[in-house]
Amino acid sequence: MSAEGTKIALKSLYDATNQDLTSIEIIPGDWTDWIDSAPPGCEPSITSPLLLVEWNLGVPQKVLYRLYLASANFSHINSVAIPHAKTVVETTLQKTTCILIVNPAHQTALNTRKNLIADGNLDARKELRFVELLLVGVKACAKESALWAHRRWCLSRLHGFAYEHFDSRAKLPSSALPPFSDLTQSVSSPFLPSDAIRTEFATVRQAFTLYPRNYHAWTHWHQTFDLCCAIIGELSMIVLEEIRGLRKWIDAHITDFSAVHHLVTSLPKVRELLSSQLFSPEVCELLETESSPSELAKQSWGLLSSFLPHKETQWLFLVSILPSLPPLEQEGYIQRMLDLDVPWEMHRKHFVATYVKSS
Image (cartoon, rainbow, N blue to C red; front, side, top):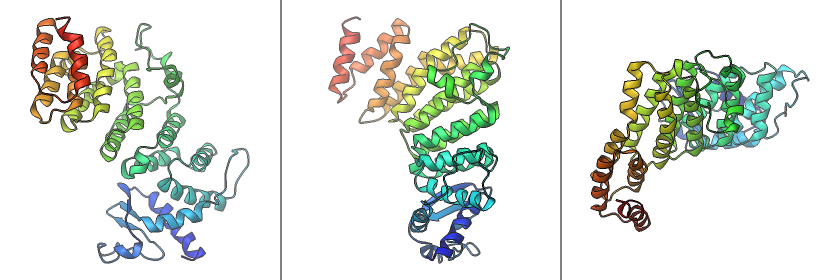
C-alpha cells in the first residue's frame, strides 16, 4: 500500500468509527478476501478497505496491521496550552484510532486522546462510544485494564468524580454505607447519572460475553454497583436488576466463578442497605427475595446437583452461602453435600473439617 493509499485508508477507518456504528470487529484476512462475499454496495476497495454492513464495521486484520505500522509516528499532543493545527489534530485522531483497535494498552495514544478531549478537539461522548465499541467488539480490548481506566476517565470528565457529589446529596443519611469498597475507588471513580449507570452495566455484560472471567470488566461492574448503593434512593431498581441479572448469568454460565464471587461479596452491602430503610417497601421485598440466603442456596444446589461431573464453582457458591442459612436448613444442605461424589479432595476435606466436626 502506497503512502497516499495508507493516508486514505486511515481517514476511511477514522470516518467509519465516527459514524453511528452498532459494532466494530477485526475480521480475518485482507480486504480482497471479502470482495466476493460482501453484500452488494458494501464491497471493500483499495480506497476504503473496510467492510461496513448495516452499521457493523469489519476491519480486515492485514489492513489493520499495515495501518498500525504507519501510525506509530503520530504527534504526541501532550499540552493543552499549545494550540495545534487542525490537520495535525485530525491526523493524530486517525492514527490513534487505528492504534487503539490493535493495541488498547498504548498509553501514549490514550494520553494523547485525553489531551485532545481536554482542549476541546475530541468530544468525550464520542470517545466513550468508541471505547464501548472496542470493549464489546474486540476481544483484546475487552480484557485491557488501561482501556477500562480510560473509559472511567472519560466518564469523570463528563459527570465529575463520585466523591464530589456525596456530601450534597440529601437522600444519603450520615449513617449510609461508605460508597466504595476501598479508598482508591472513592477517589478515582466517576459519578454517573442513572441512564449512564445502565449503559455501564450493559457494556460490562457484553464484555463478559466476549471475554469470560474478565477481571477488569468485573472491577468496573463492582465500582458501578458500589455507586448504585451509595445513591440508592434514586437507583434502587438498578441494584435489584443487577442482582437478578447476576443470578441469571450464573444460571447460564455455571463455571464462571467471577460472577459467583461478585454476587457473594455484594450481599453484605445489600443487607446493610435493606436494614437502612433507604428502599421503597416494594423494592425491599423483591430484593430481600432475590438476595436471601435460602434462595441463593436453592439456586446453587440446583446447579451443583444437576450437572455431572459436578461443577466446582457451584460447590464453592453453596459453601459461601451456608453460614448465612438457618441451622436446620444449613444441616440439610450439609448432609446432601456429603452424599455427593466430588473430585475436589482439598475442598471436601476443608468442608468436613468445618461443618461435620461442629455439627
